Image (cartoon, rainbow, N blue to C red; front, side, top):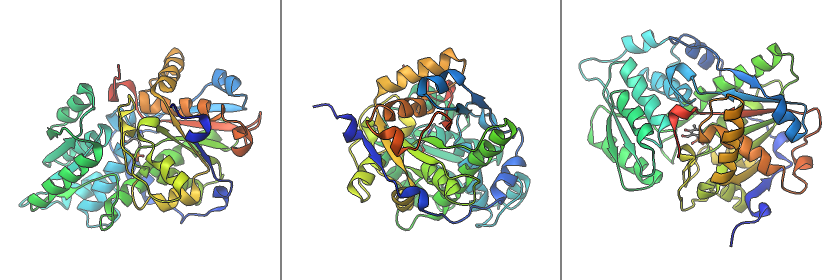
Length: 370
Ligand SMILES: Cc1ncc(COP(=O)(O)O)c(C=O)c1O
């Protein structure tokens, strides 16, 4: 039996009252020091605003972030920089590079659905380090080639994303000087995932400034694509911390892997069996353990969407000349689906004047689904 809209919807009216610890300003400064750093475009789409009956809609287009085709480098760069400087707050890549012990250089290890691994491999290349990436089944050849193209060694396993994380952990334990740079936490492995979450914050800092520069009111609804929920954690922390506004945060997952939705509905961290989806970056079965309490307290609404919903959103965005891959277009699909749920417009506080931001986290080059 296929799920009803109510099965795939969650809302928490108390979430906007929750307050997170203020985030650090040093991350944005570090990103600004990187070669080719520029804020990614925030594109206004009036036709989507009319369709959704809201005031203004903007797409944050991450298809060209720091020479890669997805946002993940924001987290990987900051986490690698902090890990290589023993948790210090570096201000430039040159400072990070100068601190590396070249007698016993570390190997960077990660598991990935594509984008995170490519970002870690890119950092290894910039810092002249070895890198090894584990990839689960179901990731496109293009995404695998993207990781190999950064010079990393790659192992593709016949298992899920969770299996790939375990394999990366084992490899890390077998190499003395290695560092596991994973974008999810588990008990006892928390520092690096937290630095990754801190790194993602640069995107929201840019959005807030761009809205101001474009004469817009602050954001009222921000739509976030979710895998293990580290990025969601970052967005919630930003908008429940020291940001100018407290928008509704909408979590969006594929029905094939809606582990954060299941956790919110069951009020406890819940793993799900994952299936097949074109949104491969979001195909994760277990929420990140340190992020889950932040989801529970600060996520206003959550929805799961089908691949067909995302295909329709991809078509809309491509017609508008916006370079979105499946995880990027998932946010438009998610808002569209959420608005089908009776009472959801009220739950999300949306009016004819609301400002909506869709975080489009990858371009087509990251994941040419087909
Ligand atoms: C393009 C893209 N968007 C969204 C996500 C979800 O991020 P998280 O796993 O932190 O929830 C990922 C994860 O890899 C991704 O690659």
